[in-house]
Structure formats: C-alpha cells, structure tokens
Length: 219
Image (cartoon, rainbow, N blue to C red; front, side):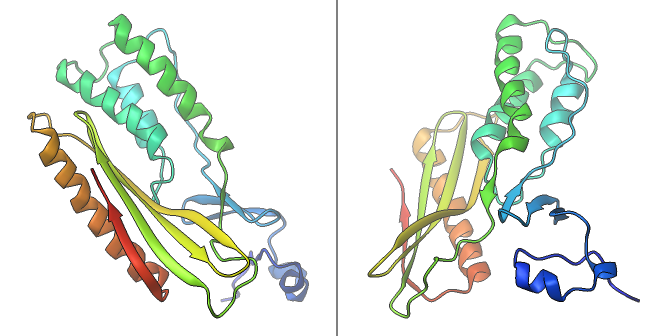
C-alpha cells in the first residue's frame, strides 16, 4: 500500500516528497483539527447546523455546541458559556424540539452563537518549542484552578526560559459544569484542583520534558 497525501511545515522536507505522494494543499486535517503548514497553526473547522436566533430549539443548541471538537480545551472560554446555557435550558424540562421562548435565554444564546461562529477564526501555534533551544533551558509547568457557582476549570501552561528567551504556551485546559445539586464553592474549588492535578499529570506524560518545577495554583 502506497501511503500518500504527505505534507510538512518544512519546505526542505516537502521538496524531497514525490509530487504524486504529496498533498496538493497547504491546509490539511490532523486528528480533527485543521493544520495550516505554511504558518504552522492549528484551528477548528466546524460546520454548524442552521441557526435561527429567533426560534432556536434545545436540539439545535445542543447540536451546535456538541459539534465543536476541542481535544486540548483551548476554546473552553467559548464552549463553557454554551454548556452553562444548555444546562439552564435542561432545567426547564423542555422537549428537544420545543422552541425557546424565554427572552433572557434567547439573549444569552445570541451571544453564545456569535462566539461559536467565530471559532474557525481562532488559530493556535502548533509548536511550543523555543526558537533557540539551549541546554540550560528550564521547563516549568504551571496550572491554574478556579471555580464558580456555575462551573469549575483548569488551565495548564508550559513556561520555558533561558538566558536569551522566555516563552509561555497554553498546552491543555479543561472545564466542567457544576452539578445540578448545589454544592458549596469551597468544594467546587477542590473539584477544580482535582481536575487540575489530573491535567498536570496528563501534560507531564505527553510532553516528556525534563521539568524543573510543577506548580498548581488555586484560591
């Protein structure tokens, strides 16, 4: 079997690939993400269902929010708003095809819809390596955890620094809705720390870097 559609962000490597085995576009899909090899960035290519902001249903809102595949959690700030909205709609015990008529819910959905439609314009650098790697480069993993009455979340950053350069990259994030059964904010903060520690462990295993320090920050 002859594997085809090869591509790389390296122009020199692309020159070595036979034309019949090379992809004919600088933009390709990798694990559900869109990779632009010319600028070496990742983005999400999402095709949303038809949205009518005047008469959306629970099914339409659910379908559009669930259609976004964000394995690294880089778009948590956008998607979490939609999940919080969806949870509030679920509390109203509406059927999937019932039209949403509450003005406050419709107003919130209009803002969420605008953010969802902008998702494809967000681009993230694929590489998190420093431009000039030195042997004395320090790798530090920093995790922030926080919670509110509606949700809790964590974000993990890789801090790299040496004598000439310092870089910080978001490498992983995760958010979850607060349970329908109300619990205290301190307990939600602890749940944020829990997913934070799990996210740090996951990032450490995947990055395979010699980490000088690992920090987990919480309230």
